[in-house]
Length: 293
Image 1 (cartoon, one colour):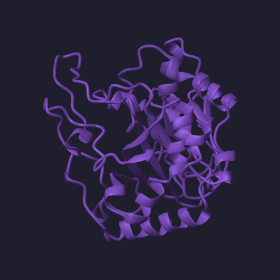
Image 2 (tube, rainbow, N blue to C red; image 1 turned 60 degrees about the vertical axis):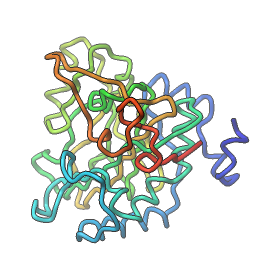
Image 3 (cartoon, rainbow, N blue to C red; image 1 turned 135 degrees about the vertical axis):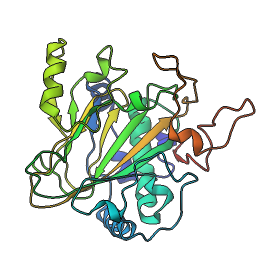
Image 4 (cartoon, helix red, strand yellow; image 1 turned 45 degrees about the vertical axis):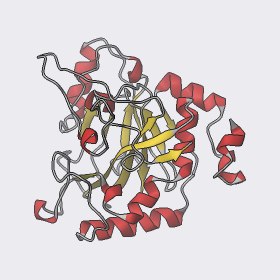
C-alpha cells in the first residue's frame, strides 16, 4: 500500500500519514486529527479565494442553482455563512479541496483504494457571538446522504487558521458512530447543543464532547455516522473553515424511501451523469474527481 501512496506524495508527506495505530483509533472513536499536512501557502491561497468568493468573483458555476446552502451578500455579512459546492465556483478553494494528502489520509483511515470528492462547504462564523447562535447543531452526515450506499464516507475539516475552543471549532461526540438508531440525526440548524446533548443522555448515550482544536495546516477527519456539530465563536476573530466530504470507491447510488414511503434524493444526484439504468453515477469524474487512487 505504501508504494501506491507514495506516487504523488513526497517522503515528508508519507511520514505524516496515519499509522495502523491511528487507523484503529479512528475505527474505535470515529475521528482523527492529522499532523500539519497542508502548507501555509495553500491555505493562504484559499483565504484569498474565499475573499474573492464572498465578493461574488467566481471562476465557474455548479450545474444546479438551487437546493443547496449558498450564502449571498444580500443575506448580510455578520451572520453564519454556509456555502456548498464552492470547489465548482472558485479555483483557489478547489485547489485546497483536491489536495492529494487529504485523499491519501482518508484512504488510509477507511482502508480504501480510492477516494473521490462528494461535496464541500465553506463556513464562516462572525466574531463575538454572545447568543450562541453561530453553533452548528448535532448531526450525522450520513443521515443527509441516504442515497449513498457506503458507510465509509468520511469528512475532512480544514480550518484556515489556528482554531481553539473559543473560536467555534468542529466538535465530535466520541464513539457516536457506533450508536444505534441515529439515522434521523439531522439537527444542523439547531444551535442549542446542550439541549440535544441532554436528550442523548436521557436515551442512555454516553456523551463525550471533544472540540477539534487544530493549528493551521492540521485537518480533522470524521466518519459519516459520527455525530458532530460546531461550537459558537466567542472569540474576537472570525472563524473560517472548509469541510470536504469524501466517498470511497465502493460508494454508489441506492434508492431510499423515508418512513412515510416517500423517495428521498440528495443534491449530488443532480451534479453527475446517469448510468445506463438511469441511476446517478457517483463515480462520474467530472462531478466527483478522484483525489486519491
